[in-house]
Image 1 (tube, one colour):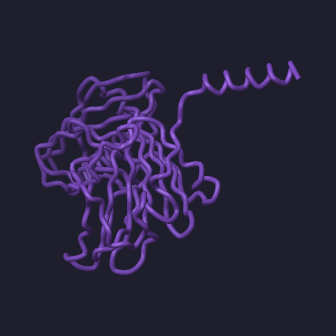
Image 2 (cartoon, rainbow, N blue to C red):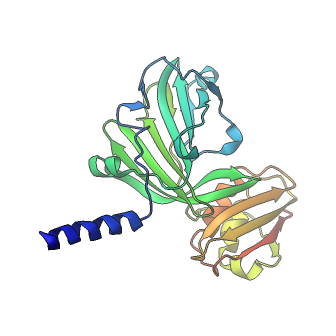
Length: 270
């Protein structure tokens, strides 16, 4: 008995020493909190979602201009300081996002779901920088559920979305990968990270194919402690379509030193 009691005490001490992980049940297979999927009910206190956040897995497509969804944030304070977001289409709740500066637990979806895809995905926008995160998406009980973990901060996000179909369609994130397009012209690259990005020159040039020339952009990069791309900011003198997506994709497989941060400039004249 004494040995058993000692073992239980040791187990309790070991569990107490583990990093705390909250039980995340606001997003469930059937609902977002007390709001079931498809309901027209809304939280008592809400405000419009800030689009500049660029939450991961926020994309959508509609057949008409009037198909734009209605996005809201539930006003807290909420447990763990998290933020909760809701999307309504034609008055019905279809999607939800849970954002926390700290760990989220997607175990129920991992156990019951089927992995749809995994990879690095662009997400949060902070002070003009886009954060890169590692994501896993599952198909679970008639919905898609994605867990995204930032490489640049402690932010994690859990998204639950309706399976695409009908007039409103969830447009899923594109995993960052080098683009197969060939450049239609040559670009000049200079700056402190010129050697770092040189292997991706052709792919970077292709990101400027459809931009009116001449075009000049400064690309700011930051890497995590494992030397993986963690943040990107693009300052261009002309709008570059999906600039961060294309440039981050071109660079995503290039390793760097731990916590490297710097910039390079790219210019194309024709």
